[in-house]
Length: 200
Image 1 (cartoon, rainbow, N blue to C red):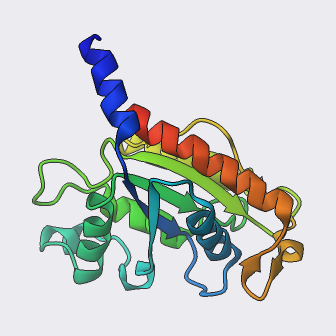
Image 2: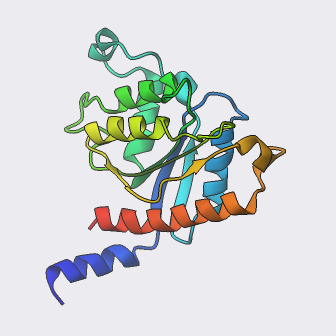
């Protein structure tokens, strides 16, 4: 067995991959928080998703503020990302683009600070999103992908998951639509393989 084959085998056999999940909305009952919880529930064996719930503590990015050291909320965000093997982002679509709160968090996370590289650098990542509209998040996701790739993130290319008309698929804060749940299950299975490829 070659060195590459051994590395592939070791990566595929790893028992647990830790994933930091981020919903790009501050609203506690947001649909993207709902689908992130569904991904947590439907993730295959060996994929453990911990949802980061502190975006409301991350201030607006300001280089003057950053020069004085990371604010506490930013430190917590960076620690959550650094402590994970991968990143899973559920984004809403606001006015045809990604939410300001999500872009702001990425702007902070991409800054190196006192570390040798940014928290995002080299991180395998999957993105998906939900919207009450008929386009899902088809316009927001390319913008998110570009922002992530510009920060050195390895974004999984396929499958693309745009959950549209989501309001009819959620009951009491739970994703109940079986088609949507199967779609997320497939996404998570592909994501586990993507993580193992990136971490070879």
